[in-house]
Image 1 (cartoon, rainbow, N blue to C red):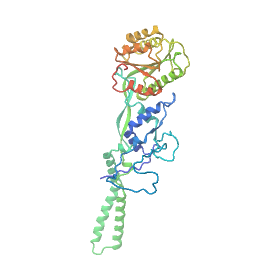
Image 2 (cartoon, rainbow, N blue to C red; image 1 turned 135 degrees about the vertical axis):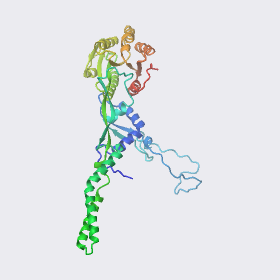
Image 3 (cartoon, rainbow, N blue to C red; image 1 turned 120 degrees about the vertical axis):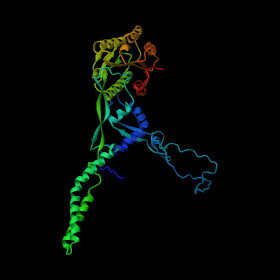
Image 4 (cartoon, rainbow, N blue to C red; image 1 turned 90 degrees about the vertical axis):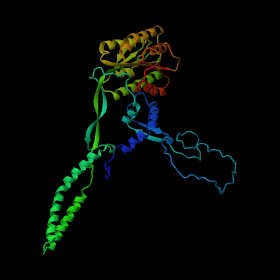
Length: 427
């Protein structure tokens, strides 16, 4: 049996194998903590790592121990306060739950929550795991590139879990042959000479001793060649290769009218930042079209979309008309996978709402793979929601969701873009 000893130094992330094993083992708890952590971030902070806390009870291991069993009587010295049958109050405060709440106490004990830091890549992987663009089809394989992992031979460095034993043993054998073959041939010659010299009637004892010394030295040198070394180790290598999928474009439509207060706009921006990170993380070269609207709609760049202070009244159809125009001018539906995400507080000029439904039914929904509408408000639904709700009954590629607080952004985002999602109307 061969024993492999990994003598490589760890990098900045100490004990990489144990770290990845920990993430796999407590993935559910870590993903829940990541979901909670994203709500506490600022609007612009979406690309850094995260320090997350996991309750101690979620990572505690079950233990087996010998129970007391049987009936026993004990006498506790110094008990002058309690008698049999007395009820003892639970210590107040100081229970050690790590939350920092409650008053100070001189009794009680426990453990703080476990704090675990994850890198930016780990954070984004957990954030967007099991998400995809719905209904993506292969139209023309030339633009949108999805990165997929493939085997790429072997390399001399890697994770211990990726060690290829057969290749490593082949390298070990080749190295030992190269390092000891000459010594073994020399050893065989010396042993033959020693055998002849010993059987001579008048052998030279000094010559015999010299040969024996050289033979012993060669045997030590051959024995000193290690069975396996770091230079022999070969690891299965994996690399991400571009996999042409199709051409795709995402339309981001945001209401910036006067009815959208700053808190509502911030929630809309959080949603779109999540969407942007998801698209750039999972797909390569996807195009994004940004549209802002109040009474008039304009196509803007990323900086203007997130940070412009322009506002006004509300005519939602202006944004849908502009989107329809851009699609007809630049994005042929037979060649492009077209997606759209619209965020609004639902407030719209009453006479304009039926017009929005007509544009969606007659033009846009026939061209897009998926259209998601997010209403951000704590008020009762407006006419725009009711109009859109009717559309969900007849178009499976149209989905609506309602966000009432920051805590609801990420769950709604996952619901809209989860893998294998069945396109249905909002409940």
